[in-house]
Length: 167
Image (cartoon, rainbow, N blue to C red; front, side, top):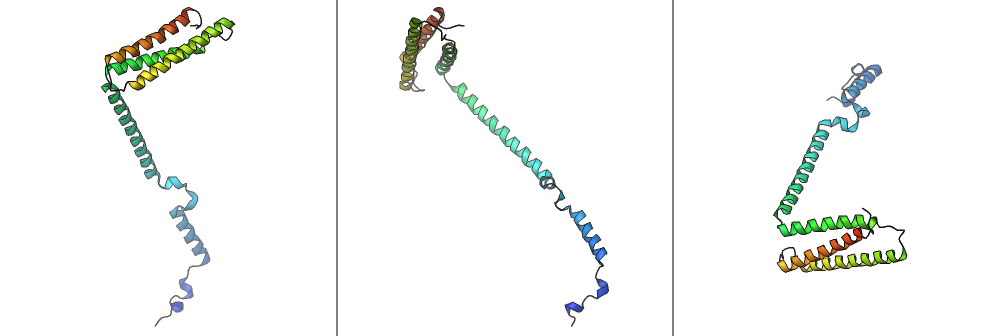
């Protein structure tokens, strides 16, 4: 029987120089730790990035389509109500910002009264909206809502005509 210590002779082992060149070539062929981590898996990295962009664009498309379908399916009364709300809200936001701070005492009291009146109108509009569900399209409630919007617009128009709001 052969003993493991006697299996190879001393001449069968590579010399130190041969061993160093052999391990240097192995390191060179394997690439070693000198490469960047993501460069080794560059293809799967780019495929993952492309897939994530596709998923993101698909999600945005689904969201946009669903939102458009919901807005398109709403009745004309709701669309008109939203148009009134956004127009008045924007005009009021700009109008309140442009009020003069250098007004006389009487003008300041008048502007405070008008602001309170606007707040009361807003409160009445919000209460009527809470009473009126999005599915309730009774003509009486819609007429009352239009009247409140009209009062608010008239008040803002008076403020413009009196010079309280600069355009």
